[in-house]
Length: 249
Image 1: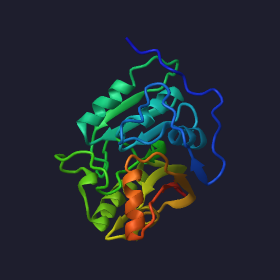
Image 2: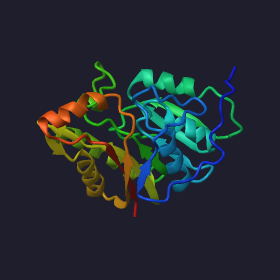
Image 3: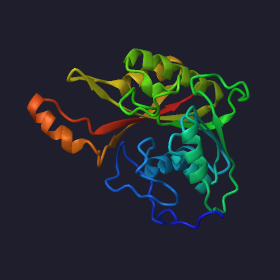
């Protein structure tokens, strides 16, 4: 039987600036902050409320921990979501097992986000949102051939992200939006602007940049370990992500 769980906060307010900070991560319905492969429900809820309307058709090509699927069901949006990892698909299916008055449909497919989906027509999706891996900072598997989180080389990673951008541009309706959350990284103590490299690939294939939102990172599990390292080796901890909102003109 579907689970009866805690409802989303009734006083939820949309963010209205380009800096988003959620010191406390709420786990309503079946959201689970222990799963490292997902993004926070506050981010997804803000995106869906601002850039789509009830009954719209959304795409999340990397569903990971199911956050987008849960919010789409709660907010009455239809969603097609992919993942290359069957374990993520099982998790998402399990997290969707709750009671809701929503009439939305959520379809989950095992699929490679870098590939063209011949079953999706050009300009058939109202909103695309995604939380790609940050190169190999967190590996989502150690056995799946096309898993982007196994790519160490930044340029090769961006080549694959460009394929995702091209497919997103193809299936997205004109004048509508695509949201991408991305972090930066370091290599040999030097800052690598992975987020901006990703942004450049989306701009290259035709998207326009609507917003660049700074999402403050809280409660990182490894922060205590890296604080001493940052002092000993003179580098700053990266504690923010970029949330890009692209528009198809």
